[in-house]
Amino acid sequence: MIARSIVLAAGCAALVFGCAEPPQETQEIVGNLVKAGFPAADIMVVEGKVYVGRDAEVSLAASREMLQAGDTPEEQYRTTNLVSSSLAKICINGSTFTGAFSTALDLAIQNYDELPLTFAVGRAPSADCGFTINAVIDPNMNGGVAGFPSNGNPYGQITIGGQLSQYGVDVIEHVITHEIGHTLGFRHSDYYNRGISCGSGGNEGDAGVGAIHIPGTPTTAAVGASIMNSCFRSVETGEFTSGDITALKELYSPPRPDGYLVGDWENDGRSNLATRFGPCVFMDTNFDGVADRTQCFGNGGSEDQYLVGDWDGDGRSNLAVRRGSCVLMDTTFDGVPEATQCFGNGGSEDQYLVGDWDGDGRSNLAVRRGRCVLMDTNFDGVPEATQCYGDGASEDQYLVGDWDGDGRSNLAVRRGSCVLMDTNFDGAADITQCFGNGASEDQYLVGDWDGDGRSNLAVRRGGCVLMDTTFDGIPERTQCYVR
Image (cartoon, rainbow, N blue to C red; front, side, top):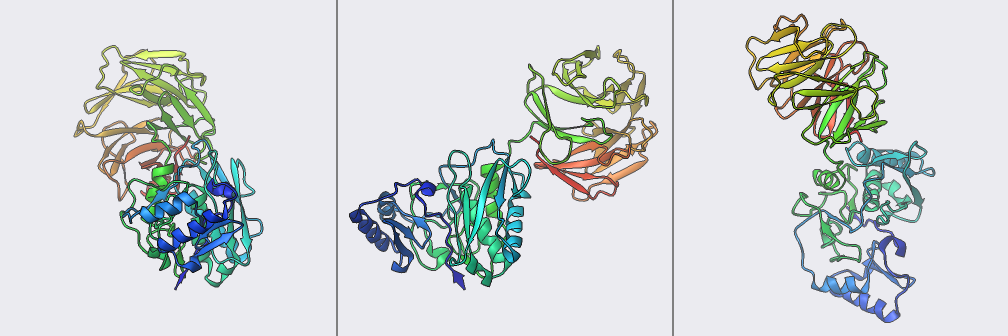
C-alpha cells in the first residue's frame, strides 16, 4: 500500500513566496498542474495559495515550468538554501510526543546524529543547542509538514500526522526523518516525477526554492530508494539508504582535517584526540567530538609537521612544530615556541618520533633513519640510544607507546593491519595486535584511551577514530571529527 505523504510546509515563509496571488493566477496555476499530469485530487487551494498533493506550494512561474520540463534521471536534490557550517548543534523539541511517536523521534534524531556531519543533532532539552526545531503532532494529518532553511538555519518546525499511528514506529521514524531532511534543505528525490513513489502526479518543478542535483547520488529514483521520496509506504524501515547518506555527506561533511594528533591536553592521565586544520590544532578533552581548546602557530604552513609531547614534564601534553631539521616546542599553548632542538645532520626524509625514552616523565625526540631509531634523551641533538628492527623496511610505519605501562616509551612497527610492539628495546616484537579488517590506507594512532598508564591503539577510518583499549583488535570507543 502506498500512502500519500505531506512533506512540505504550507507557509509562505517556508517557501519564499508572496502571501497572496490574484484569482486569475490561481486558476492558471491549477490549469497548468492538470496539464502537467497532477490528478485533481492532488491539487488544493488554500487562502489563495495552490498546493500539490497537500505537499508543496506552487508559484505561477513554477507551474509554467512544469509544462516545459522533461523527466530527469537524477535522484537527490537540494534547495538553494542550506544550513550554515557554523551551526554546531540542532535540537528538536518534541515535548508533546509520547509512545511510538516519542520513540520514532529519538530514532530519527539518531539517524542524523550518528553520521559525521558539520552539526550534531539532539533532542531538547539538551546542552549547547545552536538552533531548536519545534516538533508538533496534528491528529488530523497522515504524513508530515516542514519547510526549508533560511538565513543559515533550518526551518523552525516540523508537523507530524497523528494518523501515522496506524503504521507503527518505523513508518513514523521515516516521516520524521524525511521532514528533518526538508528543514536541512533536501527536496523530494522524485520531485521531477511524483508518480514514481506516489503512483500519480507530475513534476513539482523548481517551486521557487531550487532543485539542485547533489553530486554522487544515484542516477534513478525508485520506490523505496530514498527517505526523501515524495510518498511513503507502509513497509518503510525509517533508515537512510546509501543514496541518502551520500547526499548528506556531500552537503554537510566536515572539512577533512590535515591530520589527527593525540595528547593528554588536560593532564588527567588519559589521552584525547585533536584535529589539525592548517596552522591550528583543535583539541577535544572529553570525547564528545567538540573542540575545547584551540592552538595555532601563527606562521604555520600545511607542510609543517606537528608533534605532541610533554616537553616540560608537567604531565600535560604540548605541541611542537618541525621545520627542517629543527623542532620548535611550545609549552604554554600560546603558539610561541619556548625551546628548539635540532638534529645537526637531519634531512627532510627523516621521520621524527616522540617518546619518554628514559622514563623521567619528560618527552624526548628521536629520529628514524632507515630501519633504525636514534633517541635523544637530553635535548642536545645527540642520540644516546639506537634501536633497529632487523628486518625493517622503508615502507614500515613506526609507532611509539608505553605498551607495558612501565612509564617508559617503546617502539612498534606496523606491517599491514598488524602492529608489532617491542617492550625491551631489543628490536624483537613482544606483543602483536591486528585490526582484522585493516586496510593500507588506514591511519594508526596511539594513546592511553582509558587512563590506565598503558598505551593502546586506534585506527582512523574516514572521519572517525576507532579506539581499542584491550589489545584484541576490537574497538570499544569511536570518536568522529573534532572541530
